[in-house]
Length: 287
Ligand code: HH2
Image (tube, rainbow, N blue to C red; front, side, top):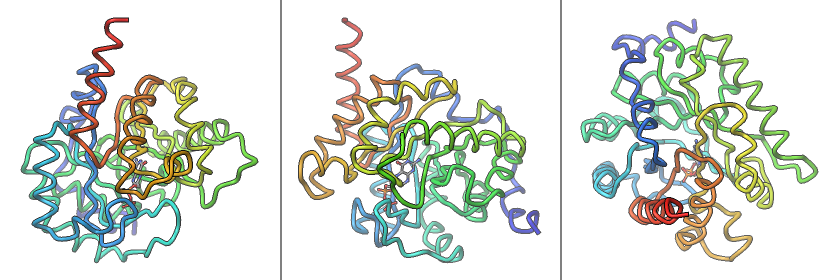
């Protein structure tokens, strides 16, 4: 049954030798992942790139601005609730006119999905990284797929709801330990895993701030860390602004995240983020 669900993605093969993320991480500078939401309802861009032509324009623009990776999703995760679940056929239908063409632009493409079937389709269409906002814990076939295809997988911390009484760093570490057990049991190579504290997901705004402030504690897993603070609500809790006016807060959060150990930054605003990270690195190099 599982084989049948995933078989579409297993045909073209993808070996560790072609792991584009390892090659990029070896550059030794923070990587920038540009977000492309082919959705009508993302919290961050309100459907601006639902139209395939606009989505592809945006993909090209982000690469020209310095994106190292494109993260393409077709179902809003709506970190703050209200997501409309998208059937798998519809998710693939949204990706079809965009993802294969985006792959041809030359930057590695990651597929942001909770569904192994969609991930399998995307890998067969040329994506080379899986981004799972449920950290391999929602559908175990995701780990199996990542193992079979030997592709890097982003394991993000998530919870159904926030609990302000939690020690959020202990909770994230516990979740990652569970995800790593699942990954190991499925045969996912340790070096193919990236950890992400999941800013805004199942966290109070304060817990999102803590996850960035204490990100360095997660370095003990010995894996690259990704942070996606872009336009998220915790910014507005500190400095009120609607999602499209949170660039300053996003950049501040991302610069702090890199200072605290992040290797990959997921952002909607590539040019500004690339510039900010370059300047922060130039200053740090002189310290
Ligand atoms: N955030 C969002 C979606 N996917 N993936 C990872 N690994 N880390 C994140 O922080 C993350 C993610 C939410 O942002 P966005 O894609 O703009 O919103 P939506 O899910 O509503 O499309």
